[in-house]
Image (cartoon, rainbow, N blue to C red; front, side):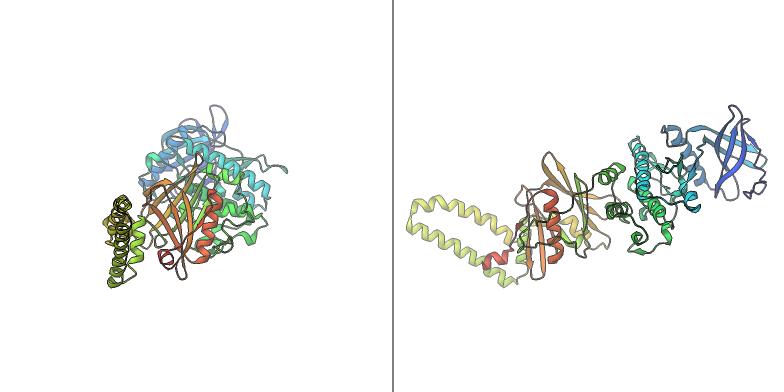
Length: 502
């Protein structure tokens, strides 16, 4: 087999494939395959041919991706995506393999433009971002959805660029494509600096492509490869190198968040947030000044991402619990010794007994009316003191996951028909586990123990509650943000000890 060196004098030039396509020049190469500009002798039009030959560096994974690219392109029909033309086996003097023929787009890549000294204004970057989102939105609406997995400056072309417009945007090179039909693959593909952390593990979602869009914009704005920029906890630091507006920088940071759950889920979500950014917080605090009135985000491990209809809250598992309200009382009582808890129980029994005796001596008829209510109250209170198994069963999933260092929780708030639906998910594996879903009734916050505060999400059922804890700054900020977004005014909350003392 002849060695292919990619030079202008390569033996591939002028080769005719399939008795129709004459190779003109090399456009690019990757391990295991080359891309050529060719002439279709049948209609005298330029085409692009991707050639995969069985060579020493060939792998069966290359063939699988090559066939998948052909299969996917054949099903696509979008003006900003190269048109599928042909796919066939080849057998030439240099070896055997396969060829994929696509329509040729006479345009330059974003990478070529930057390397040639071109610079883009914020208006141009905005236009490029919107066009890319349009293409991705088309891909994600397909059945099954198509995930590109290798969005980067060299795979985005611009045509007819002028002083008033960045030009027409095209997305090329579907050699790393994945569809839902192939979601079981663990193939790690992509380009370092433009692929998100989850893709290194073989997992790709629409949000993974959005990460590539964000990194591409960073490259265009700074002229530097994202991998060469400083990082802070996997967040690429770039804003000091640009003159972009704060809102546009925040949007790019949203797309390039290293956490999959902190990015927009789809291109539609990214577009909605971009075109209709959230309103700035109101000057008036949601809570009174005397009660956790905090609007500035403190240093926190709690993350919030909001659109007009959905708010995502993610936090470490140690800071959240979903439980029966009775179990919360148990947690408070368990702070006491057995002797102290016994005294509390007997004190409650004594109060009930004295009340009953007093009523008997004062008014028999009234006592007979109130006695069933007192018995019912006692029967409901006693299991709480005995630490029922019900609350433990509800919290089982959370308790079993608390020992996992990477476990966290995700709370999704969705506005539907003038109500807020809350979904609690446990994140301890690839797929989240839904723990609870219900309609939010009220929000309350206050001091739990000295230096520790809590925020309560309350639901129609009296025994269901989601509790988030943290310091005063953290809970105050979170309470204000949730109240602002949900439109539900938060109420002060006092813990059981405060109520007993008060």
